[in-house]
Each structure stands twice: as C-alpha cells, then as structure tokens.
Length: 329
Image (cartoon, rainbow, N blue to C red; front, side, top):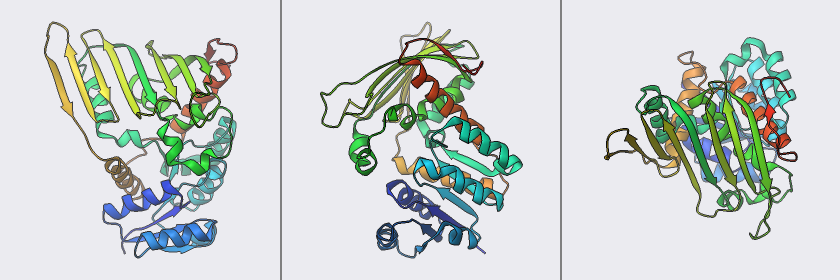
C-alpha cells in the first residue's frame, strides 16, 4: 500500500508541508488541528485531504510518517507519542521552548529518536548545500571566519497570528536556522557573546529586534552574526573567509560566488529555486528515513544543540559576556 503521511497542525507551515508531500506524489494525506476552522480550510485548499479531530486518532491511522507543526510547547509530547509507536517523525523547529525539556525527551526516546528529524529545512536548500560542498572540497582552503546577515521583518507579516502574542527574546529561537547550519558547516558552536537592542522605528516591535553576536566553534573558527526583525528586504547572506579564498552566499536568492587567492575572476553558482523545492526535498528525506533508507539529516541532538545556542545567546545579552556551551555555563 502507498505511504500515508500525517500532518499535525494545519497553520501556514503545516499546509506548506501538505503541499510538499503532494508535490512528490504522496496522495494519501491526513491532517489534524484542534481548530475545526483550520481543518475545514485545509480540506477546502487540498482536494482529497482527510482530517481528524485528535492527535491520537491521527496516530491510530498508522501513518508512514508524521509532521509535527503545532505550537512549540506541544512539540515534544507529540514527537514522543508518535516515535514510541515506531512512526517516523519530522518536528518543526525549534524542537522545544526549553533545552532541558528537549534533553529529557531525547533520553526517554532512546533508539526511537533515530527515526526523528528536526525541520531545519535549510539543510535541503540548494544554495546551502552548495556552500557545504564547496567547504568540504576545500575550494577556499581552511575556513577562518564567517559573517552572517539576516533581516527578516517580513516574517512578522506572514505569521501575523503568532506575532500577536508577545514573547520576550523570540528572535533567538525563531532564527535558530542559523545556529544549525553554522554547526553543520563549521562544527559545534562552543561559545557565544551577544549584544541585543530594541528599536521602535518599525510598526511591529519585537523585544529585542536586533541581535549582533560572536560565535566560536570547537574547530577554532570565530564569526559574527547579525539577525533582526527590522530589515524589510528579507535577506540571508553568509560570507566565509578561508586560507585560499573566500565565498559569499545569498541563501535567500540562491546564488554563491567564490574568489580564489591569486585570481581576480569570480566563480559564480546559481542555485535559485522556489522555497517549495527545499520543503519537497525535506519531505522525500523524511520518507527515506521512514523506510530505513536514510538516517536523519538533522537529528534530535542537532535540534537540541540549536536551542542551547539560542539560550546561550539570550543569556549572554544582558551582561555582554561570553557564555561557554561546552562547560554548560
């Protein structure tokens, strides 16, 4: 019988997941949301979608895989229920609001965690994978420094309902994508220092809405990151300086340029693709994990590490002191 994929949480992200699975040929889709209105809207948007009115009913259908796209505080409970039934799970980021809760859940899951994937979709982004390949191939030599620029005020408009509820320090975890892909490219993040600010010169004010940070990895690379809910262009750029060259990747635009030492010419790579492409690649990956054909590209341990970096940055900001993650401080 063909795969049955379940999605829990039918907000904007959950519906995007449904479309991603349909785009790769999955016809049997079922969804759950506590809101009857959300269930009805999703059924209207996607022909052939069935919905149920409880998470237990969703699991009782015996799906091949489950996507958990409910609010953050409910992630771990649903992950544990599904994984303990032997169902492959993709849980949206962040894994949980609190690192200690995530660590305890991972411990309880034991080997069941091996079929759980965290939804850091940039692991499936073509441009991000281009950077990973260029670094692995030593195209710019040994990386020595990185600089990240992320401006994402537009997210507030897209997810207006979520931002209607005030949450201090939301920015650190909303964009934990950065903490995940930096660890993927450069190694575990070992210490951080953050400076946080809030400007009221934008219509919707998050607190803070500007964060600048220094990060050091266990491999000895030090880099800087700027993230904000101010810049309305929507930008995600990464520069990397290596011993034999440098690269600049515009992850949002899907382009990368490389300059090698001794050459004035730029090498250009074009990996432009709609955002739906990365979600579809992630959907295919989840099914491969479910069928035992792949191991999670982003494990629950990776998801926990990203939360720990976010928490360390938040802890650093009030004092502007370094926080060492490897010593648990």
